[in-house]
Image (cartoon, rainbow, N blue to C red):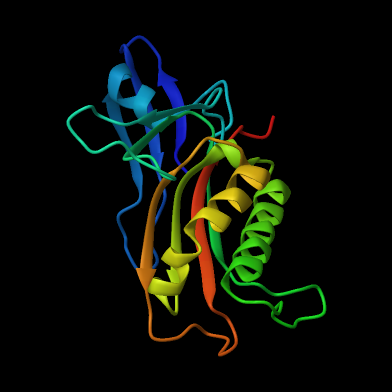
Length: 186
């Protein structure tokens, strides 16, 4: 962490540089206030970024999206990376019944992690769906869409579905992974 203090009468701020293990280069340098304003955050903690603003962008020159957004821009808040989730139940077993129940459970698990990080479904900015059988996933698209709308509403992050040979758990048919921008903790 840099130590910052104004150097009297210079219009500059002195930064105390940390030593790097094994390096004799330790000391302080004078930098302009503009440069130091970018380095030192005197009146607020480093995690503060202000309120969250998420904009879903779907340009007219691209095909109308169905179940995803072409781009998502986020400002402020805290970036939360959500690990891949499969259809694990609390007892550690994968839910039975095929791709739709597994998608519902995987998405529910992802949303539980998101809630624990202080977010909600509308904070999702990107989601990747990994499916063992992409044709089966697409064949159940309407039912999967119904699950999405019931759990997340009609706001969609930037999304991709990827066909994979298998997932970590051999019984898993689908896995979801994402990122969100949530309000910074105060």
